[in-house]
Image (cartoon, rainbow, N blue to C red; front, side, top):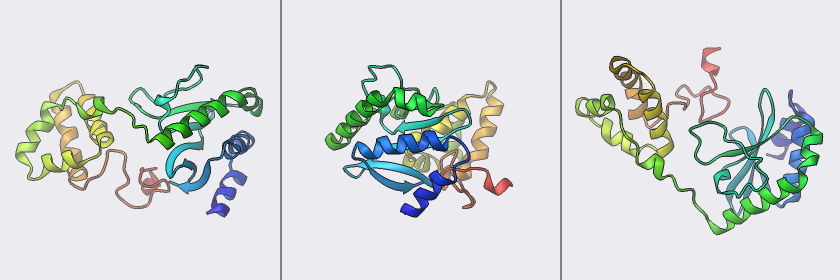
Length: 210
């Protein structure tokens, strides 16, 4: 595991210096380094706390329960408008990491405290989804579909609802439902890999298409 993590940082094509600077700060805070989803993941009290990840325009320190953090310095960024839990600290230089060392340490300490306390994010908004009519109609037509959808995690349910509801026309919404019936029945989310070839399991990274 350690060799995989070391190789990840040593062979990084983007933001290697910035990610190594973040790694030192995270480890000095007392988190445990692990290898999950083919990326370095840092845990405390056996709970996922933060990940270090490279992106095209920045590298990020992504807090799994970032929404719980006080964010007094207003540095946390949501990775997307539908993200209810994860929040990122984004960096584009080592100097920027050094500038915010104190804040990073504060965020890490607070996140570790939530891990120790077992604090949970309130996902009420995910649990009270308004299902599109086209999906509800298919529940009556396809045996087991309603039960399979109910068995999905709240995040997977929300992903399907947002995708289906995003279409303006009912015909398109119905087509989107039909396209994903098999995926729902298989217990897969809209972004989950179904071919087994992804390098970022369980997420699909498009490997099968290359």
